[in-house]
Image (cartoon, rainbow, N blue to C red):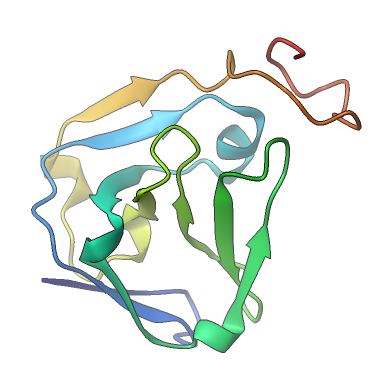
Length: 128
């Protein structure tokens, strides 16, 4: 079991999973977040405190749900678009986790379709 939190500690969570691979993503949002993530099943992520301090950001299809602490602004985790029953967890929020000891795989998000009629021109990806 791994404990995690945002920077200010308002949002706290646990991950009950063995993390054997990390990912990066080249979509327009993940590039700006500079996130390194661990993919875990939704049953493996438990918010233990501060659910009311989580802000939600949804864009494009609205399937992916990106959660941030509304006090310190740290991205904690997100529900994945490509695997909606999984979360991507920001490994830098995991207490004492040695992310450098786990292989990192780059994933391709830049080519995911844009289905939002108001998509910004700088968002890459094919338009639906």
